[in-house]
View (cartoon, helix red, strand yellow):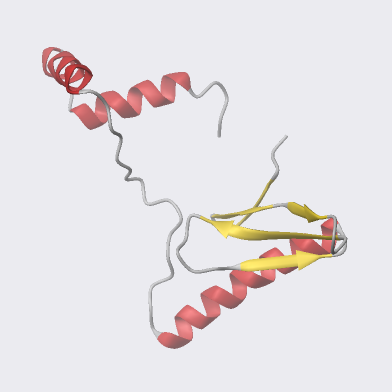
Amino acid sequence: MSGLLSYKNYNGTVEYSKEDKCLYGKVLGVKSLLSYEGQSVQELEENFEHSIDEYLQECMERGVEPEQAYKGTFNVRISPELHRSIAMYAIEHEKTLNALVEEAIRNMRCGLA
């Protein structure tokens, strides 16, 4: 079970404010602050989708490319020894380091979509 909302390749959180007695959240993985709230799960989901649609419409009207939450690139910091070791392993197996890391992640996903 996931505590995230998904719509048009964007993901958002689901939070509860005890003080305000409402659900709220924000879109993850983008620099722009896209937030939403609702009194019910259905209203929260509708407002989440509305905030995405509104953001995409605004980007189109301004002629700018919408931010993509996940571009397929990320940096990983590891020890120099491990870096050297996996680089040599990749060379020995005629693979790029990127291909080796992607393969390792695919193999350990354990059912993640």
